[in-house]
Image 1 (cartoon, helix red, strand yellow):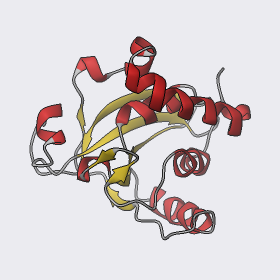
Image 2 (cartoon, helix red, strand yellow; image 1 turned 90 degrees about the horizontal axis):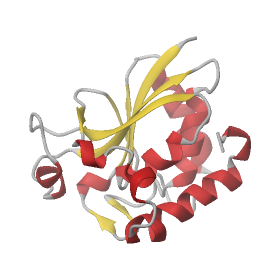
Image 3 (cartoon, helix red, strand yellow; image 1 turned 30 degrees about the vertical axis):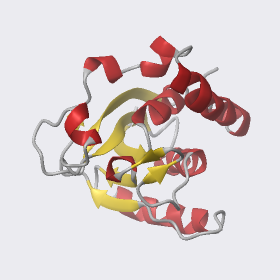
Image 4 (cartoon, one colour; image 1 turned 180 degrees about the vertical axis):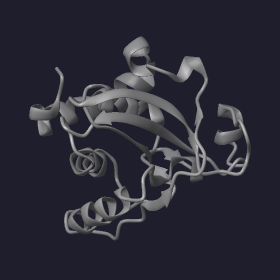
Length: 176
């Protein structure tokens, strides 16, 4: 087993968490905050935009079961990497598209996938790519959110269709 980590942001962390929890080879998904200046941010400070952090998920994965390239292909398919600081109705820097790589060797892989995915979209990718400098776990009530609240409005209207899309497009990668 060869364990790696990567931190991804593409809108609300609940959406990415729900998708990657269903991805074969992903061992752990944790929602959190990265990329800002405030130490130990909370949801309120992140949503205000004052902390500079993005809502992100930290993925621990076995790269013998799923590669970083495959995870990034899922990531760039499941959110719109061409909209600056926005995913659907979620607007603000906390919803930016971002990849925080955890090992220097991951940078070339991120750049290669972005170059390949650029041809898929009609507009330029605005995804920020940086080495991970900080990461803070989100509050406990934000973890496993979709699994615990699938019937809640946001989950039913926004997250469930994304999970269904993931299952359809990436059926071979889905645990379900």
